[in-house]
Image 1 (tube, rainbow, N blue to C red):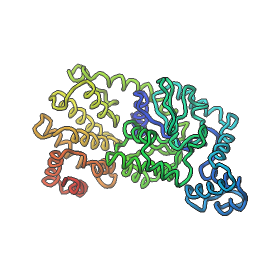
Image 2: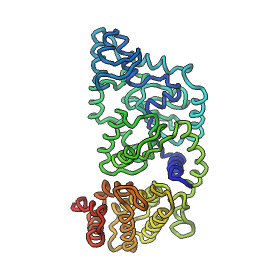
Image 3: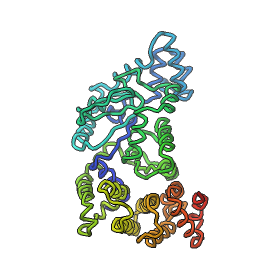
Image 4: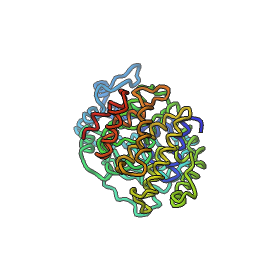
Length: 446
């Protein structure tokens, strides 16, 4: 394992192997499969305007040398205007949208090689969920044979072998389900529905890979903001954004700090699937090894380094302990948990280990949010690990200083139990002149 990118790809592959991966898919995915023939939202609305007349197109959109440049309004407002114009002609904009998309995503418009590549991947490694804001039915029609489109109000399949494709903004298979206008988005945002709960549950409980979106995409950012408030400040770094283009460090910092998103840039969709597939054998070994909890508690076996380098391995261990009926007050359990955190600390000592600093902060917070540390057999070791994490975090990434860990502490320290907050406050006030650690003090008052 030579790079942080390799570690992230192994994390994704392990989630897939453990049937705990969600693909969150945007328009760029359909464009990839159709060699750019699938319309963007802007071009889709422009085509709708053309259906009315040329003057409407020019009133709503900017063109240069006959090519679409931009929309003069927010796209949801533009859609609202178009809907009213369609109503005047006794027509339905959603049926028009469905017709446009169907024509652009037919079999003849698909890239055969790319479609086969993704289809083969999905068939070989079925341990995933799919959520999409796309209206088209490319996934259910061409990529997943035993699947069905789910839109709000649909009946869920009672056969477990049928995979649901969650179209959170509707699908052309049911034109009336399409969320298009400003009013539609407002109602979706403020309505408690099964599909919105499903979305936020998957974002919270599974590793999520974002494919086919621009970081500036309206839909993506609105959903991330909703998910942020749904989850509170409990942001874990297990959401991964795949970008074909390079992303600047400032944007990476913002999306990690705001949403817990790690960016994998300069990586095409086809390259991403190839890279994950290359990690699957190793990932399968990790998942099989993670199931040996009783032997590990007895000291007969231990977790592999590759497993413990994964960000979600600590949560995986906690869940397995709970499922097996072990209590955190058990000294044997406490010793196991602190031992794996100590090993996580060891992983920060190698080069290019930025993700390990972040994981260490997350794990310390996770344990401190569920177990009162004072009076336990691991109290002093936990305090020493806190000091190490505080010493190696900083507001900027530099040698031995992790801003990812700093951002995690700043946004999640409030999750600690009241007693553990007192422990952290005492450590900082007595031992730390560092500004980065002292910035946590206001969050430790409650």
